[in-house]
Length: 268
Image 1 (tube, rainbow, N blue to C red):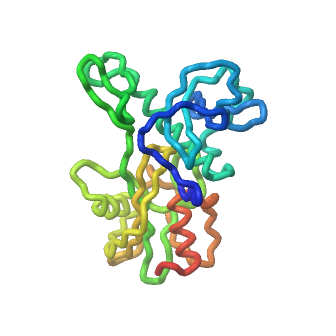
Image 2 (cartoon, one colour):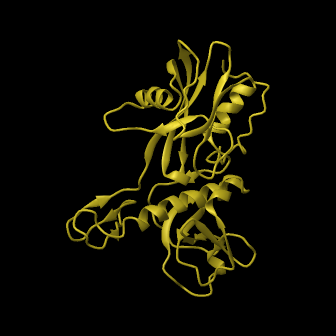
Image 3 (cartoon, rainbow, N blue to C red):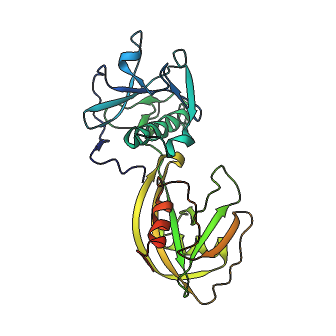
């Protein structure tokens, strides 16, 4: 998955430090990441002048910063391409930097009083100097559910909307007043009409593309495995065997890993 960057280690504790020549500087314009004259991410040594750099985090001993470098950018790429870009540790750094950038963009003004927000100096947060409102990075919990029937088949789907149109699993966001396990059961029922039980938690994944923390579950059908597809959410929902061709578009996502586990007989 995209966050599996070993032997590299991310240090996301908020401990700002001075920049060094080999550190990286991310610059974004909406969903695009600016690149330098070599079509690579900017480093401090690429900057012809001193300008304000916002500290983001560190991977190993390399620090990452945020700045506006649109005047220096030669090209850019859409953040969607970070799913498959190598090296993976830099792609993960870039999408995490974009997640922080997006959060800062939508919190320029206080949602309580409308005053301009400032970066807090002690923690990763935006603070209102007028009313004291403190806003932390947005992280939305959601589920990925791999549903298996009594025939040993896996429920695979394709979304009705959005750019990603490879095979996926049932997915959805946690609602107020609901446990994450209840979210998994509800989302399967809403999108496919299926009742599931025997939920087994697999693992989680930070997914910076949507500011989401994903919780993966395997589940088994209770009763009929006849699918009633919600066409507002899905354009495909079908049962697949392990030897079927199931293209997930790479190995960046929790969805892909869970489907590959099914294909290679690691679940049943």
